[in-house]
Image 1 (cartoon, rainbow, N blue to C red):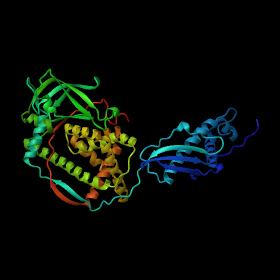
Image 2: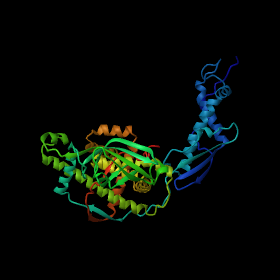
Image 3: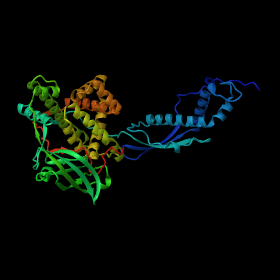
Image 4: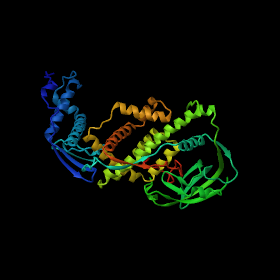
Length: 476
C-alpha cells in the first residue's frame, strides 16, 4: 500500500468566524411579519466543506487506514452525504444569525423555515427562504408627564366584615333545600349547550352560586338569578346564550346556542361559627382580631392591584393611542394563553381567591384577541422604554415575585419556583417584572389626581367551561 501523508486540520487555515457573503432580500409583509430570502455564495459553501472535512479527518475510519490516516479525498467521498447535511445545517444556522444581526431584526418567535425544502447544491450558491415575526418598528410615544387618575380608599371595618363574610362563606355548610333558590344560594346542575339540536358541550354536577350572571369561557348568561328563581330540584330550565366574538370555534362566533340547565339540588349556605378550630384552619390565627388583620392586609393588596390596574390602563391608553399598527392573528392566538397566565400570576400575587380569578379569566377569554392585542402593543412599548432607560430584571426581583405568590397560595417559594419552571412560565414572570418596573418609572414621572374607589361587587358566577367545547389557546 502506498504511503499517505496526513494533512492536519489546522493546516487548512480556515477562517471559521469570517462573515458569510450573503445576498439578502427582506420583504415587509406586515408590521410584525418579514419574509426573508437568503443566498449563500459558493465560496462560503466550499469553505464550510473544507472546515467540516478538516474536523472529521482526525477521527475518520476507512477500511485499510488507521484513524486519522485516510486521504482527504477519500474521506470527502466516503462521508459526502453526512458532510452535506452538516454543512447545510451550519450554513443555515450561521446565515440566519448573521441576517438577524445585519438586518437588525428583533425576532419575537422562532423562524418559520421548511428545512426539507433547503437544498445544498453541488454547484452554485445555496438559496433558502423563511418567515419570521419581529418586534414592530414605531416612534416611541411621549411617556413623561402623563396625567393619571389614581384610585384612593381607606380600608374600613365594613370592608373587612364583608370580605370576612366571603371567606366564611367558602367554609359554609351546605344544607339541602326543597324550595326555589334565592340569590346567594347554591344549585347543583347539569349543563348542556346545543346548536340546531346537536350537543356541543356538557358539564355534569356543576356547583353554581346563584348570581345575576353566569359566566363561561366563551359566553355569558345574563339574568341567571331570574332564570332559576322559580325552579326546584328535578326541573330543567332553558335559555339562549350568545357565543363571544373571539371564541375558539370560529364558526360559532356570534351565534346563539341553546342552554339546558337541569337542576339536581338546591342548597342553602349556613356560615360557620368562628371557632378556635376554624381560626387554626384558616391560617393558624390565635384570635379573631388576628384573622381580621390578615383580611385587612389582603384587602390592601387587592386595592393595590386595582390601583395598579387602573393606573396601568390609563398609561397603556396613553402609550398605545398612536399604535395603529396591526398584529398578526397567528401571533395573537399564540399569545392569548400567555396573557391569561400572566394575568393569573398577577391576581394570585395580589391575594384574589379562585372564584375572583375565574371571573376575571372568563372576561379575558371572551375578548381574548382584543385584550391580547392591547397587551402586546403595551408590552412592545414598555420593552422599548425599558431598553432605553436601562430597566432590567434581577435575581432579587424573581425572589420577591415568587415569595409574594407563595405567601398567597400557602406553598413554599421553592415549590412555586419549581412549578413555574416546569410549566415554562419563568419568561412570563420576567415580562411581568420588567413591565411593572417600567410602569413604576412612568408613574414616577406622571402627575396624579386621587379619585374615590369602591371594591367591585361580584355579580357573576364563573364556570370553568366553554359552551363551544374549546377554549382559546388550547389549539396552540
